[in-house]
Length: 103
Image 1 (cartoon, helix red, strand yellow):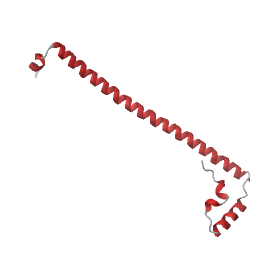
Image 2 (cartoon, rainbow, N blue to C red):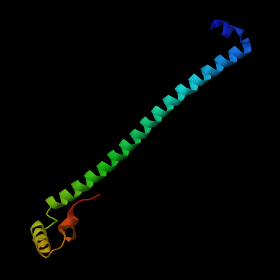
Image 3 (tube, rainbow, N blue to C red):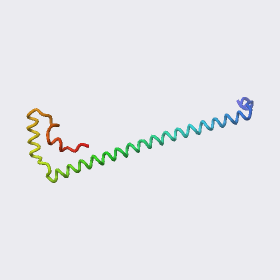
Image 4 (cartoon, rainbow, N blue to C red):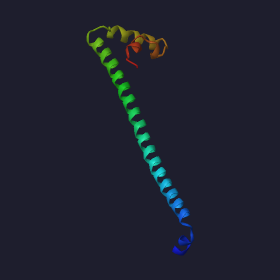
């Protein structure tokens, strides 16, 4: 095997080694770039999900505070819900459904 390598001209051997090193460096660089890009994309998605969750929690807390302050007449809303359900309407058409904090 070494005879075959020794029979190749020195310039061609240097060019082949340089090309092999270049391919190895580019391959490693590509693998590292892809893994870092994937990690960065995952972190961005997690940050957006955390922000969305915070907004949803604040909406829920706001409506819970309104309920604790007695802004909603729960007894009347429940009576209307029972009436609507008895009339064959969907619960989504009732007033009480509108008090659910949906973000």
